[in-house]
View 1 (cartoon, rainbow, N blue to C red):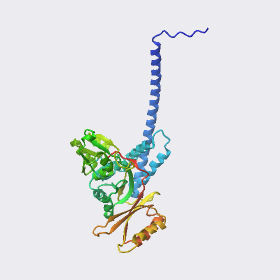
View 2: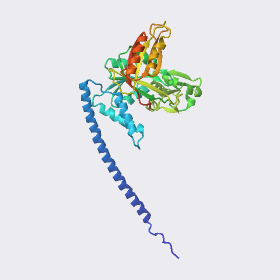
View 3: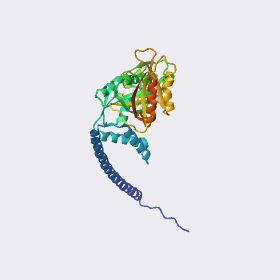
View 4: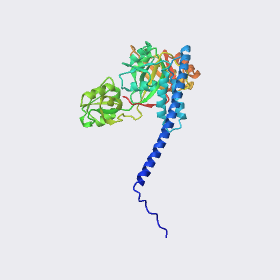
Length: 389
């Protein structure tokens, strides 16, 4: 009969085995960290190689009189990197890293000044950071018309202005200012917008008043009516201002964001209270020079028609259908000083230099009372998440 081996009677053996396992783990950890250090040094070398190339690009742009910022180039670069990403890094992480790299190396050409609808901590602030990255000088201004003025006067190289929201529709002040401004449209950004209800206590029963920008209140109207019926609503100049108000008064809750809440020491009462969870705001990027075709563009144009002519609007729109030009948006705004007459804003797919677009615009202009092409610019790739409100 085979006898089983007697268990070791040496009490130090388990401790010795654990020590050996720790030593092996430490050795492997040291090896992996040395490999990470090697990769980091290689990354640093490649980053500086990229920076030197960008400096050469900047010199060429300066001699050719071309702008530093190219929305199409940055859009296509990031899209290509997402498509080539094998993981394990998620696509949005890769995009965030390379947005920062692009911003850091772009400033070697020239550090840009970008005007946005202030104050800090708003979604407009986040949109400007998303469009240009962290290595720019962001200039908060108010109202929206001041963004256009800052660009026109050269006080900012670019501006970022909200133009429409999926819940509340167009931003009328932006449309009205586009008509009289001489800025060029050079890009767009789609920013996902998510709101929180924030207060000092974080308790719903403590809320006696709700404060936010009118857009914030409107985009969360259904949630507020369900959970806080009859509670007074206070309109503020921005959601950031609402957060500051809530930080001063226990009875006030702000419709704002996690970032705004953290900066003001507030606690979430509820998260994601927007009525539509695809809530997205579209921003226009403003500049002083028209941009060339990118292959995936939008064109914005404004028309007026003769009020007394039956079928005038039909004749205005018909050339676009005939030339195969897709209209993505049609908006109307009252014409200043002319009661019940309207400006018609059209967004259409394609660049004004594309042959079908050019033909359709020429024929529509012949039917219109007046027209003006506001600009052609690269389309945004997709909506990106927002963290400030």
